[in-house]
Image 1 (tube, rainbow, N blue to C red):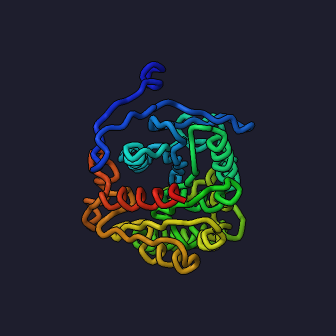
Image 2: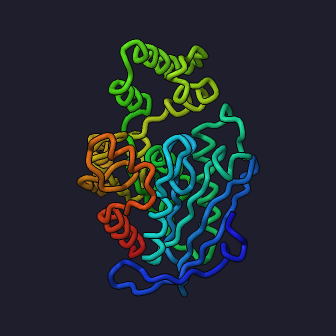
Length: 321
């Protein structure tokens, strides 16, 4: 565990960004009492005499923590590294462990009680906490993967100045799962997988899950999947009235470029950025599966440089307003 003295210390470092030689950043833990459990996160706050933009970073699906790491997929520190890219450019951020995950496990220890509505309510509550902080300026919601859906649903209630969809799907997630699994499962398991997806899409749990499918369809996660499959990411994104940025990598093996283009089609005023060679964990990686899987477990790989450039440019445009 990080000591309190270290967590509250001011960290001085030399920025890697041109035009900004040094930045002083307060790094400390932050928590939120939701009334139904306490959530824990990390605040990066650049020292400034005036309020700075703040990005609420919302992680992706499953037990993915505030840093973008997942015990089932490995440690890559993608969201942690992105937060520091922001900090070096005088942009604050809060990234947090979702309820039921990592330090926020006690907020909802039984995954049967998780829901999309609860995740959205938490994002809104974090947003209100940040809006009340006089050190912080315009709020941008940045969601990665499934977090992009949560950001889209939360943004209107959160009074967000902008939304960033990073590797976010345009299709209902059951459709994404069908496509992903069709390339990986033998025919008998694919048949059973489709039956489970049909049942969950119809709002019915199905406890008869073969062992190889337990990681995705275990009975305890099925109530959450039912709440997730009800959502239409494109519809939620189209309803946004504030500026939005869509970022998608061409080598993402989980979400496609077509998803990004569909999001752009439903919200034509959104900015669309396609990054050649970037994968789901924001690294430039060849498309072969071995290199892809390895990147999910390598925190030392640098983020795609174009990612930082485009996110910073967009946030600067929001702050300028």
